Image 1 (cartoon, rainbow, N blue to C red):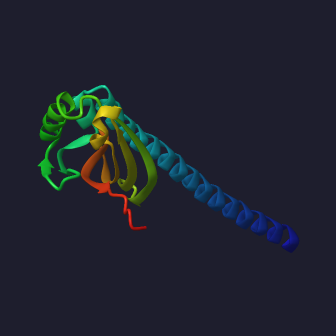
Image 2 (cartoon, rainbow, N blue to C red):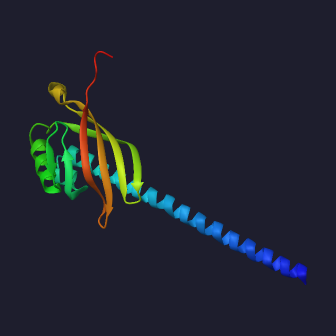
Image 3 (cartoon, rainbow, N blue to C red):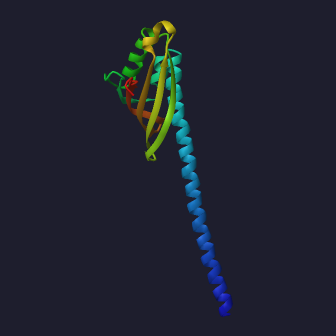
Length: 167
């Protein structure tokens, strides 16, 4: 009788432990899946910016930004709000940058919290041979937040990479 009671107690403890491990594992899988989905959405935002530039659509370029986004341009000018970002980009895409293309590459996505990510992106702007002064490399830092509508760029800092000829 004691042996049966001990066996039942052992099996109960073992079942409880197994359930605990299974629950923890399911949570970890869910967290990994969530990050994978979040990373895919973040990558899509960056792809959309690139597509907006390359098709000369300021609205598509600005679509991933939050309505009240902060944007620091490569030359230090500050723009606030998706509407202003769209308008300024449409202007430059219609004029000075109309013959350029942009290639963006995500270097790192770091989740500060489940709903906040810092995204580091390199960019290369290319231009025809007769407009080589428009060729440029940049390093961008984006703070993205997960909202009801999906991931949005809340803050954007664009820094030009200048080659150091003395190195």
